Length: 142
Image 1 (cartoon, rainbow, N blue to C red):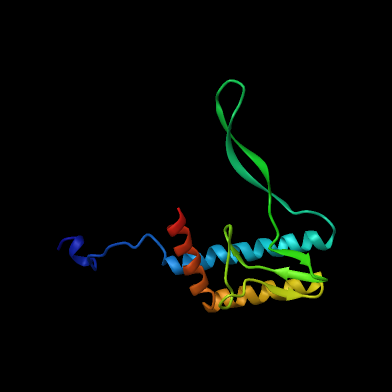
Image 2: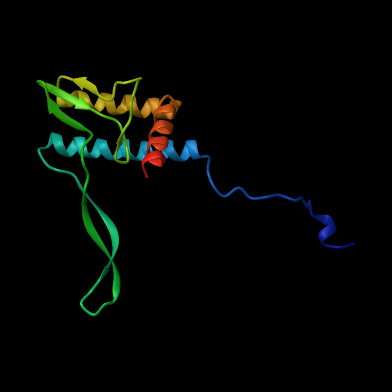
């Protein structure tokens, strides 16, 4: 008896990519998690700076992978005696509900609750339409 005859053989095509909707949600969730770190730093009166890896040429023309600081812009800002929080996908501001693009809170401490709401809404798929519209705007302009 053949060794291969003992095996359960099937034909399959491997799916390499994730669903685009899930990929957009994951990217937004990563941004929300990073904004929580930005909020913690703002609460301490500091600015949040992360490190990213970039290829840089040295004096000899050789390229080396180095870590460089990257400033992370907050999604929240102070205005009108309170704080506005905007949900962003990359550089685009998402329309959260219809035309509204920001949430107003009275204190900086309340921003954390808004970020948690953004996270829950993303996980539940409530922001999928806004993400799709942001992607359509990106392809229309560039």
